[in-house]
Image (cartoon, rainbow, N blue to C red):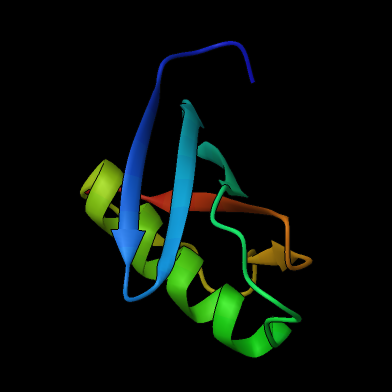
Length: 75
């Protein structure tokens, strides 16, 4: 995404959170050996909420251990 980003740490994971309107992309920037997808997604959701002040729209959090996308439910 072509916008400013915010770096957020959740437990042992560091993320760059990029927002464009109600869309968000999260890139995990911390080195971690074989992180479980469920753990990364849960931490990415927390990072999104901390960085944007918005909730993640239910059912839109998708991705892998490196890149996660979602839509925001603000207001």
